[in-house]
Structure formats: C-alpha cells, structure tokens
Image 1 (cartoon, rainbow, N blue to C red):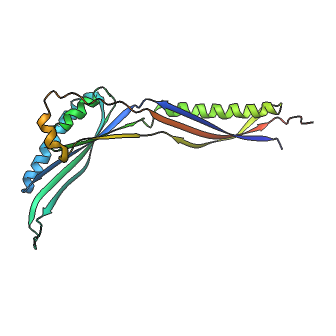
Image 2 (tube, rainbow, N blue to C red; image 1 turned 90 degrees about the vertical axis):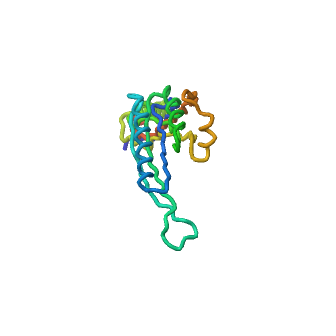
Length: 222
C-alpha cells in the first residue's frame, strides 16, 4: 500500500575512440590460374609482414574472404576462360592512432591494394560504458528524490531497476584509399617516403538509460 514513484535516468557521454579498424583488400588478375594465386599469395604475405611490423600498435589482425574466380570470355559459346581474378580481405584493429596514418599510406602505395576505413570505436569492455550506466542510475535516483521532496517526504526503498538500453559503438567516418581506378595515377606520384595521411579521430557517443521504481514514505497530504 506504500506509494511508489517510477522515474527514468539517462546519461550521454562524448569520448575519444579507443580503437580504429581498417579493411585491406588485395587483388590479382592473370590469364593463368596458378599465376593469379601466386601473385595473390605474395601480396598477402607482404601486406601481413607490413602490418605485423607495427607490433603492439596492431591489436588484432584477421583474414576474411579469399576468392579465386574465372572470367569467361565475352561472346563465347563455350566455357572459354579469359582470365582469373583473385582477392583476399584483411581487417586490422589498431590502438595507436599516431601510426595509423603512416600504415594507411604505406598500404595504399602497394600494387592492387585497396584500403577502406578507418572505423573508430570503443572496446566492448570500455570503462566509459560503466560510467554512463552509473550516471544514468544517479540521475534516476536524483529525480526520485526531487519528486519525494515535492511531496515533503522521502524515498523508502528501491523496488526495481531496469536497463532500458545502452548505446555506444563504432562511428563510421570512412574513406577509401587506393583501388583499381585510382592506382594508375597514384602510383606515378607516390614515393618511398610518402607523407602519412592525416586522420582525425571521431569522438564516440555513449548513451545509457535506466528505469527505477521506489517506494515513498507516505506523505501527509492533509
């Protein structure tokens, strides 16, 4: 029979990202299937060595889809193969943004290499998520106290606390470097000591919402 009050608490944070992801797509094309595979393998090894050379700055390196597909000759009635296309995709996660621009530049300077990204993000275990949740709970408690004060009474007990949603993840600020269409003109101007790309991290939004129900000491309304 005790009166109860149900309130909502929210928190909104804007913080610096902790990691950045880039996707590297390597391609090869030749009329011979084995040559296409050898070229792709060589480029993959070179790219992996380059990325791994940045040591602890690279938090994670993963290999995605590997594709070798034939291209049939146009206007051919049979199954005559014109060429073989190969591609392999790598995903690198970096935690050192000072080396990110240099790595992107060096990757984009390689033959038939496409670089997409970066995608800025927080780690799932980031303490910023816990901070937002705590702030949301504190706001819910403050609201309940304000309602109780308006009735000239006090909060008695917590009945329920529910997490109605926490939001915070990758921010997609994307650029593309290299690629078949740009490679011919870019290669002519590139140099071994090409200047690193200037990349500014995108701040991340972290939101948290809770709902809380409290009982109140019955107020004297007379």
